Length: 355
Length: 255
Image 1 (cartoon, chains in turn green, red):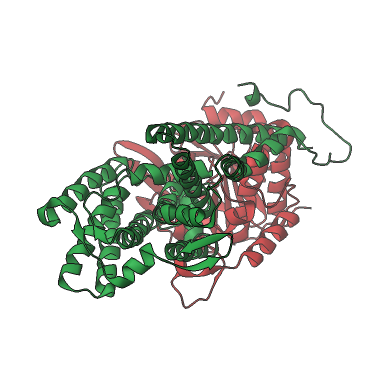
Image 2 (spheres, rainbow over the protein chains, first blue to last red; image 1 turned 30 degrees about the horizontal axis):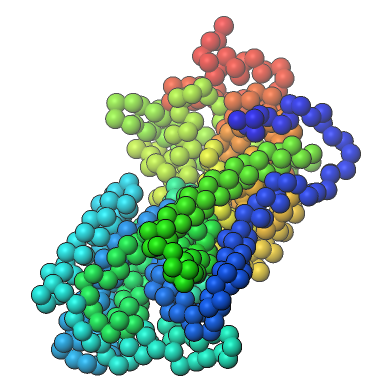
């Protein structure tokens, strides 16, 4: 640790004017890291656009948007949980359970409202259980409790679904929201309706995370939980709320999934937890908590969608897609480590510059 | 340019007793802190300094004895209560949020937000006002920061210490307690924090300073209270002449 040495020791006391802040490789590196994911995404789009002619066609861009809607919405919820140094492994099976609950309600009524509400409430309830067990069970980390609900929800979904299999049919409105496209920007993109749901959720999240006191508390809890207690922030309520919101996002994702497939399946949402965690990390949020914003989750979700779609178009085996996304996750986590290291360097440089 | 200390203490601890199981951590300790005065709280490790400070800042409750603020019994139940009563504490770990900017750190947990009819968590942050207020405090205390809108993680140890001290002054109306504020700092950065303490005193705060650095005590403190094994063993005005006496009081080696 060269950087840990006391910088005071080697410098005589300066008496002249304070040196101006100048360009330094450390701050440049930090800036590059902060825009890295967006740069990589642009690069990917350019490369794929060049080598696969159909990639940039309006219908394909519409396809990508439709494919990533669920990951994007659920990743935004996951992002809040990760901000507080947590993790929500249950989102995939929670989504399956929510669609099954919605499917069961659809058997009773074909009104879209109760079916939608059932899915949202089911998702949020599972989130509330995650948060409550984590906080009141005094668990050191939410990994285990969400692992447990991952298993429980999948089991419940399979048990509740008649014949343990897919239930066909969804109310028309849900099918329209989840599976159809009404708007087209000519020569550019056919916009799936689910895209507007993603935008709506993103705007609400942005309002909460950046403009509201509660959002500031979420960042504070993620930044330093002990200090948040000392500063009088209701840490337990903040933690539980992030899991409830994550569950609510799962409920919204369930509506989109059920609408797109016009069905409710206990097998929905397979490995969604990995996709959403990957999206948050690839997008540039810190796995260590406290750092990141909604944009990171969205960029990460788009990146996953773009890679999957392009490799599909290129007829690359699905196994290689998994390998590619895994490799990118490693790069993203290393970038996070590098950022922490550079910030440490920046601190030392600051101390050296203090007159 | 020292402000003349008031004649009445702003903070009085009377007959404080505290047990932790079999350990008698505070034995009938009394002390007074006055506005415009730096009171050094001295003692070797385990002497009871931290316990006393934690009782005053609401982390622990006294078993016996009372804490008076401006002569009135103070309601200090929990850290939030102590802060509401006007007692700010800067702990050794600073309790700063690395991922937030200085202004965000200043107001964390006590954000300026509107409209007031909403529950606190739902209100919208008044960022402009908080930024302006924080900038004013930073300016007044002559703290130099490289960038006002950068997260605290990017700042040096001294700057972080200065931010934590400055934060305490935003809300402190009576007492500021500093727990070893210079312990982890280099010479120049420590100097800056000492200047900050002088500034706090000049502004009429009662400053309680815990430190092991005798040079700082002699330079800054108007009075020093020495604890040893949970008991108050001395109170004097530190100066060069009695520095040695202070040290012997602390270690318990009166000749």
